[in-house]
Length: 435
Image 1 (cartoon, rainbow, N blue to C red):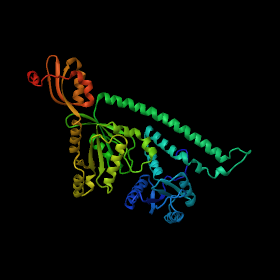
Image 2 (image 1 turned 180 degrees about the vertical axis):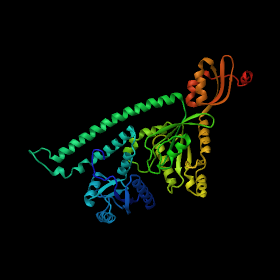
Image 3 (image 1 turned 90 degrees about the horizontal axis):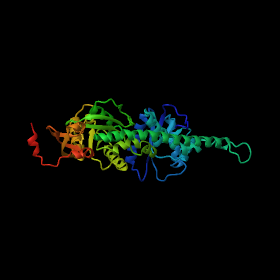
Image 4 (image 1 turned 180 degrees about the horizontal axis):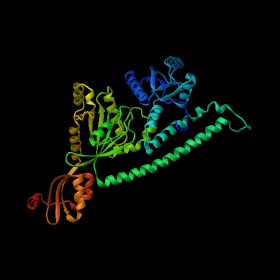
């Protein structure tokens, strides 16, 4: 953690603990444990072993009973693990008690995800956001880091021991840095707001690629836009929003944004920290919701993504459900999915199968949000003609001595910019000005 050195090696042998309870059935707990395994792999650590435990009643000291706790420690010792990771939130007290009991590094899913984000933060903004999440996570755990030092009291009666002094200094430094980072992030967000206003003025329609982590969103963006966005078969390969232009079938321009993948039980601090990437989602005209055909938990992951979309105010935005990686599964699986989710599209970013159909579907989704207008534009305002040709779907275009006449389907967000050129007369007038 930034500001708190835990002495971990770059790679560790870890022992994973899944937790089933009255709220989390054993089957779901096993799915989450499997996902924890993949998260651990993503960080580059080796899984030495794992255990699924049933939590009947949580305890404030260790989360579970002392007998089961000792059983876990013994199993981790036998597996040669130096780290224990829980797929359950650990309080600062519980984390400290586990480290004392096991003499190992112990942390939970939230800290693991923060570590992964830290390892994949390549831009200034992502680095700042991760550091903020790290510091806010570390702050309540400071007291337990200095538990032993706080027993060392010296000097006059009533003065603070060296441990208390160190704790107070570190807490003050972390709080100062948190305030500083928030200021830097505010500056970055203002810069992004300026960029966003420029895009809004041009009224270029926007689509955002969303979905559970590692469904192939970045690969899909690369194939659709011929870009070179970083993509690999790991969770959270992309952290920063990446926007590229795509030319649609009818000549219309679209801004396509890739976003950070969603995941169950994402640490609240990271949901807030990465709000900037989610802003792109809430401002999109259409969402491309990507699911992984080879994922056994695909239905659960689709449900998680939809829930997050509603949480950020994007639940009502039109969306296209895309089944990606169909090259990895049997056609029977694909057909079953398409039957289960009518209107969805099956594609493979790797083989490019179905991408043409997807582009057409995006075009149709945007067309539904457009209005048909007849525009009469004076030749002196030729920049409006250029705007229409770039951002609208032109149905007819003719010229006379004074005007350019254009009948087009235009994005609703662009209507205000061209409203004064709208022609209210009868459309048959077009016949008299055709060459």
